[in-house]
Each structure stands twice: as structure tokens, then as C-alpha cells.
Length: 152
Image (cartoon, rainbow, N blue to C red; front, side, top):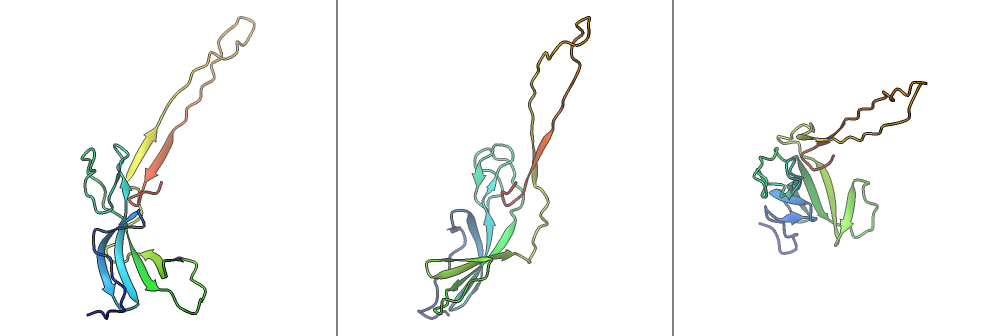
């Protein structure tokens, strides 16, 4: 049982920093809470951003890949004003740090690949004395991998 001075933990389902869904409260102590969170993810089919705990896109119904989870450590800021670790930030008197989730963590392989394509044609300049057409050609293929945490 937590004392009245303990930090109130976030409940699963809470949207955290407008980007992460709290999946579970892993530990709750007087000065420290640890959560498992999942980033919102964009659907590879329609592009709509979905809650981190969603299994299917809420717009088009496409099955989403399993979310890449992270742990968030939330603790009270020290009253001494000590420097923060470079991987953390201070907000409302609390220090937050994102760390990899080691329990059942997925590899960071792409969950979807999107192909962007297009073309353009130009008659070009005329070559030679007989006015034969320019036969140069160019082809470009651009692939973008979409990871489960939403990053390209």
C-alpha cells in the first residue's frame, strides 16, 4: 500500500505525453513508478495514427503490427537540483526516462514498407544530323520502412 505522499500512478489506457499509451504499471513505489508504454502507430494502408494498444486500424480495419514497447521510469525530481542524466527530462517536478522494454521486446525490424512512385517524361534535345530522338532514361525507386513505433 502506497503512503499518502506517494506519486499517483497512471492507469493503463492513459495517453502519456500525447504520444504513448500506458499498457501496464510495472512498479509503484513512493518516489518511483515504472510503466510499459507503446507509441501511437500509423497505419501503413491508410496513414491514420492509432492508439499504441490498437491491434487493428480504427479507420480502415487493417491489422496493425505488434507495438514496439518501451519502459518509462517516473520519479520525483531531487530537491538538490542535481544534474539530470542525458536520457531524461524534467516535467512538473518529476523526472521521466524512456528505456528499452526487455520483457518480450520485439526486434526493431520494419513492420511495413511503403512504395512511393512517379514518373516524368521530356522529349529532350535532338541529337545527330538526322534529328534522331534523345534515348536517355532514368528510373528511381524510393522505399520507406515504417517501424512499429511510428518512426520512418
